[in-house]
Image (cartoon, rainbow, N blue to C red):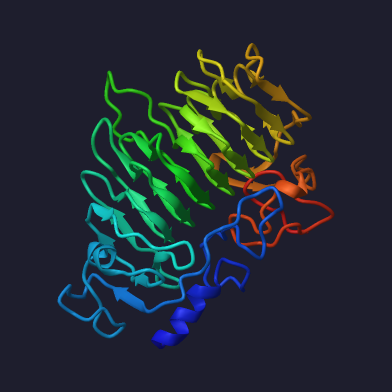
Length: 375
């Protein structure tokens, strides 16, 4: 496959064009975003470079003569450009600091039909920039009691993190600092973080969400034995959580609140099931502004669907019934036959594709959670 053909596949894969390769969950796009969701980053249409474990950072970065490290790409790309990364294990702590622009974001993505792994003893990916897309990787095995696989630092903004598998950190899966804004966490599988958790270590969550104007959509977040699936804490404003499936957390599926102030949070169209405490829990410091919880399927949580006691938490119509996953024991969280999540989501807040790239809706209506059941 030539460089031009590869570039066209990546350009159209997840943003309204045909799905170009398997196992790359689709992101919300400018041609397929629901009316209640923010607009995504535009495509990166500039020159494409390539990275391979068989390459050299002294090479020109072409398909025939690729670079060796992802860090070389992150340190070189200019606005609008892309790097496509070949399969293999990259033992790097990638630091992303060069910005794109609003019209020309930078993209670092997996090469079509390949699944590169970024794994490092400190942390696979640290981001401190704006207008950037990271797509299609396995991000794993951050080491340390305060580590994270993906770290959004400082005032990072307008970043799309999409179609990745984020797993086996000793602490958090994804962490964003209070100054961050306009992050889009789309179609990721975030699971089994807290691996190697030690006595006295603080809680380890799938997604630790601070900042403002974020969106988390189409994510599958499961198996977090030392924390929450999603923690909207300690300072977060105007963030939207839609069509996520959150299950198997040792605490609650989602927790909202904190001393820094949490307000104007939308929790809609999610499946929050089989977590040890609540589907949605409130922190001891209640949210300071409205939190809307509606059109979710909430079931099988040890302490109940939603913790009460905070006046700013507004609970609308939710479905309290077994979501009927295909096989919870095998971590297959697609919707089985007769699932009450089918055709029950609010369409104005539903992405137009699901985590697997399937078009929404496939039946009479949009489905709740990360997966759309084939109609």
